[in-house]
Length: 100
Image (cartoon, rainbow, N blue to C red; front, side):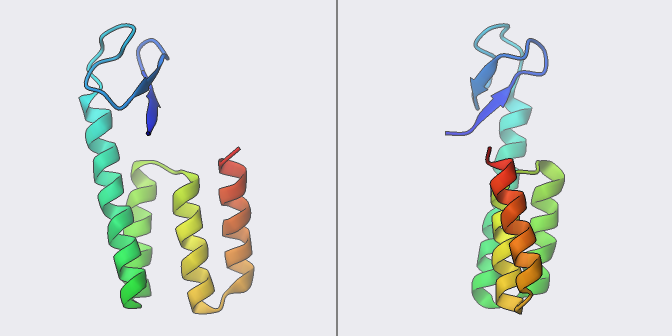
């Protein structure tokens, strides 16, 4: 399950509509995460179809919402498909560091 940090009181929360501690409205964080998941799914579908340009565009959109290890992993996959092994290695390292 994805968690978020409340921007008001800094409490760690599941993606619920209200902060468990201060009751701040977190519904917009959940909506942003759902939108990000949509773009990650679009990127995976584009990779499966072999459309690397569409995959790169979808990954950029997902990263603009929130950067995380999963976007770097999918960038590594795209680089491997393209045969760009140096870039794939760099994205893998980035994903590994963000996962810490």
